[in-house]
Image (cartoon, rainbow, N blue to C red; front, top):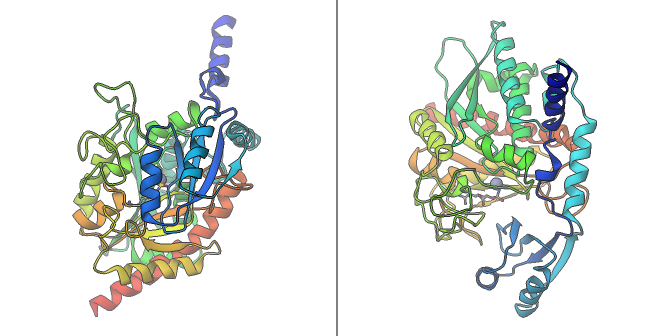
Length: 436
Ligand code: 0X9
Ligand code: ZN
């Protein structure tokens, strides 16, 4: 009996929070991150082709001319990377000296914020959580709000991932006898961008339990669909095995490399040669065809089905502080109503204290086809569709790229909520004007 119990306890410890068996975790000792600036589209193209044979991990691909490129490399690749920088006369600086110590620090901070045996619903907003905990949270929100006559929250799944996890969604609304337009929000398309699901979890809390005037107005005017983890398989892998994992976890026939970049797989002008890849071993693998993976197919199906009632789609990523609107599939494809999209983004950005760059995804430097934002707008006619790249701005300093200390979650979430409030209130105003 004691034997069984100690095995059980050992297992529980092993999978604790970010835990897992550390021997199975991919370590990044001696890996460094380098920041360079590409001054033109041509220079970026040249850089990409000169480095195509090197195992580089792009933390940040530039979204605008003179924007930074952040690249993680292993110690044995550093010499070759520097040679390319020299050849193209690109200035660069090392912004992270040892990636593993940054990852380690994050793990330690997460352990410091330990949960109590029976966590309050609010406590879920303060740390990064496992997929199972996120599901517990959504169900707890759903159960507790449904006791009140005022705000309702319905938990449901839009489908299963490759590994059989649920793509969980919650609809938050106030039923007052009117059919309302909706706003769709998601996070976690990219596994390692943990701040995105954390921010969506915070939005859910505020919409379900917030009592201020703006939240009430947001529920008066819209129904809210929120999905914190579009890609739970990849997210779990990034928690337990490889902190820098970006893709989903599907097996790719004929390759030993797993996963697809879900944000290259949506079925609108799908094109692996535009910011994606046909190589399953690449981080931006576009998949074998559009909608080849369930994660994008299920989300796309949901958007298509609810398209007419959804007025805005916001997909949260990190990092860089960008508010991007379609189209991203090529450098020449700017939406015809881009002024309206830019001005609504401006309203949101003005309400936040973090400084965001507003722009059209593909135009300036870095087109990428198959994004969820393009699909929402191009295929589902959701007019106001955006990719929001959350803080920080860069890979340098205390909050390093997609590694943000969990103590920053409430700070980033509160600021982003200010933007969301302004966004929703202005959108409601535009809707009303249109009806008059
Ligand atoms: O490259 C992406 O998928 C997004 N950036 S990230 O650093 N989070 O990976 C930007 C997507 C912008 N939208 C489209 N290109 N459609
Ligand atoms: Zn992303």
